Length: 316
Image (cartoon, rainbow, N blue to C red):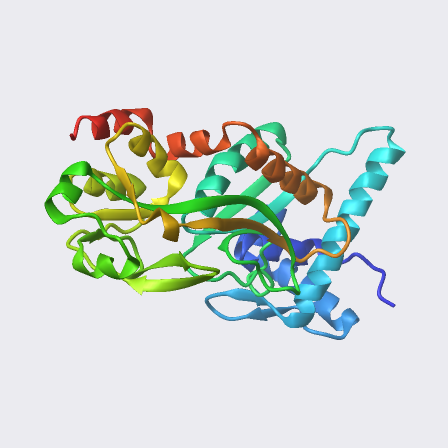
């Protein structure tokens, strides 16, 4: 049984830093030393940990499993060290976080800086993806996902649900009429984001409906709202961004019967048992932050500041 720790620090550094060069810089040693120690570790273990090419470094399947054990072992050592010195354990280390573009990445951008301010010995890399995230192959510690539940082989927790709504300005509806069924959307201009379809609830099921329009806004929430507020069509978006405009009368809700009301934001990881201390602390922070009063309004203010809200109110 392998019990020596030689090479484990280098292995974790390569995973955290994303390359042998950055790992060597982080550890203040040469790339050759990092490479040699990991090779020696793989030889002792009897299996390969990393797939290395000229452009990237990725975990093997065995490396994914070994990484999880190493994280927990390091966390246990930190706790033991603190206990031996009569101290309270302090979160420290590096965390790789991934989030799906949209609400999940907005949450991460809002809450992670707060966490870092509270834990000066922790560093975080946040990557935003437009498609599915494979946390194992990409060496991700935590992921924030949107939509339905993640695959069952991962540890997941539903942190937040939100509604998606459809709305348009009074001027647009006066000129073009109010849709009564989802199929009516095909006769309307729709302010679109990335996808050519919108998901709606039809009875007990969810289904997509194709939409089209003259205005398409990619990856910019204020621009999406501005287009709708300029009478360019019906907008489909997270309710907490649109609700202030509905309450002010600038937008009128449509097709409420078909709104999706339980779009989830999930926290996902692949740790067995307790995650390492610094990662567990971030999990707690994300959980508590998303449950805090006023969370939705803080996210809205981050993405759509008050100055923009005031400009929107001047459109009509």
